[in-house]
Image 1 (tube, rainbow, N blue to C red):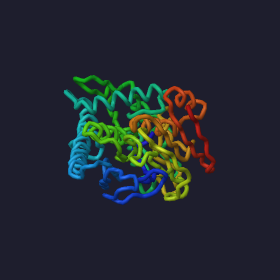
Image 2: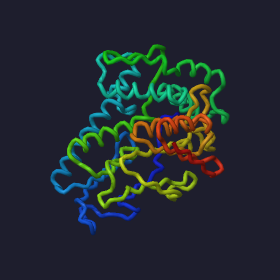
Image 3: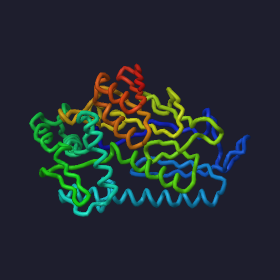
Image 4: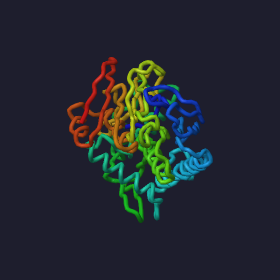
Amino acid sequence: MGTTRRRFIAITAAAGGLPLLPCARSAQAAPLLRVWTGSALGADATLQIHHPDPATADRLIAASLAEVERLERILSLYRADSALCRLNRDGVLVDPPFDLVRVLSESQRYGAISGGAFDVTVQPLWDLYAKHFSRPDAAPGGPASDAIAATIARVDEGALEVDPARLRLARPGMGITLNGIGQGYVTDRVVELLRGGGVEHALVDMGETRALGAHPDGGSWSVGLEDPRAPGKIVERIPLADRAVATSGGYGAVFDAAGNFNHIFEPSSGRTSWRWLSVSIEADTATEADALSTAFTVMPPEATAPVVRALGLVAHFVRPDGSRLVQRA
């Protein structure tokens, strides 16, 4: 799994892929549409809310943005004062925020489900590769094998102690990244907030995408999956209603100019993975879609198929040669 994410999902606001303008009504007198665009956890973000009362919709958007800001202060790897950064720095965090405990507990669950392919303690590997390739004399073959082996010794989700009263990294030099699950988690929290505010139709994208209900026109939201070899080109559209989708792909962020080393790591080997060019997961929650799209990028299809069946997923794989594989529950 990796520490930085690139977006591969294009969102179409209307059922059947037809665009809607903000505040426009459909022929079926759908609720008014309010749209916000910005960023969250370092990724492009969008809120599309259909609600009959514009003032209420605007209030809920403001509340959603406040919730995103609150969660960034807890989960961000790029804010020195975040709870996550304090845990990485000190190795222990007493009285941790509930959301950090929750997302780390979920991380360990998906680690178990994926047989260790999902592991939030891979941050030391990212640091190793980033430091190696930042040097002007960096060996093009990547970090030395002994350096990778020494770093792997600090990658172990089992050495992450999760308790509501205390979080602890049991080994010196460990580090956590939530970039393989955090955006999905934030997306789900915003969906919960909107649902609690009475919203029945919304599309939330805080780095990963989740539909709240169906589109108010009666159909599904249309979400386009991009061609990982030609960003911006939609190769498949999937209907989404009360479901989520997330995509991971190693080519979205590479360490070297040649593009041989990406940000997707196999926790067991410490090597970057090109098993799949991209993986998109449809799941009930954005947290699940986010975590498992990350995990599946380093897993063979015979290992992913039982997970797909057990959790009711749809998994879209793109091989390095561009050919595609779809697994369904």
